[in-house]
Length: 321
Image 1: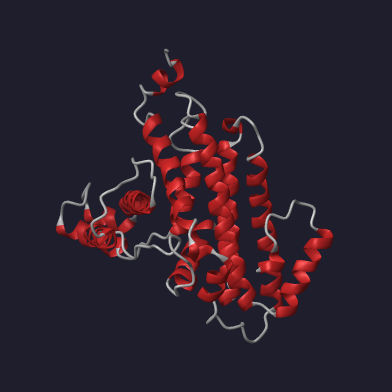
Image 2 (image 1 turned 180 degrees about the horizontal axis):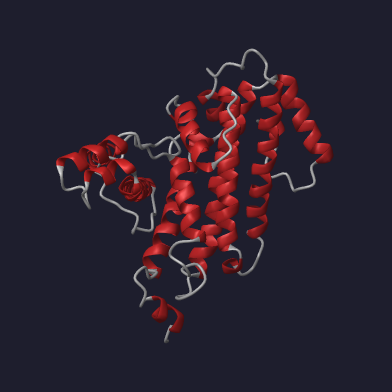
């Protein structure tokens, strides 16, 4: 069947690649869902993972309130994801579901930051960097959310991806069926995000005064490469970096791939379910950490308050955390 819109868009320089975009989006979330569906995310093991986390001292009531507020915002987005699961035609909500998933992750990450250090970063980029330094590097997240790269220099990325892959040869184009295939997918997406971030940083470097002073147009000269690598060495990729890129692909890049083309209704239905599962596991992990850090009274009062005054369908039983 002719696809007029796609044919017209394909004539542009930055045309959408429907199949490629769809596979990357769906397969990464399927991989994450497979990996969080394991004993590491059972309540007893989550408690054990955070058993050595000490209560914050001295008590920071303002940070406690900020954390509870962000938990509620994260839960609201998770509640939306659960509601989307009840809609018959999932294509109608799939793009909105990705946005709800992202903000469930984003607000949860802000919660962890606030109870770790009291920081309250106000932008997505700052949240990414603080979560990396205060949470990820402190080993306060459970795999697969703990993976990161601490440099964007190509040789460094290649070396680290090879190390964590071991002998795993699966990539993001495989719809994962098991843990080994799922791991291959997330390694592939981590590598792809590093490439994307490197391209963005290289573009920014070329717009800067230091690069323009060199009087060159690319990074082929030694001086240009040294300048580039000095900046790339400061770059990093973590789970929040990947989630933000993921949100952008759904909203801005690759255009129409979630709204048009071949009917993939069964995959879309599984995809919305996977978004919900991954968001829930991430938020639940967050709550186990938060409960160890904030004042006992603050947590208990927050739980009781939600039971009395919450107006959304509360998607987690916080009393069991």
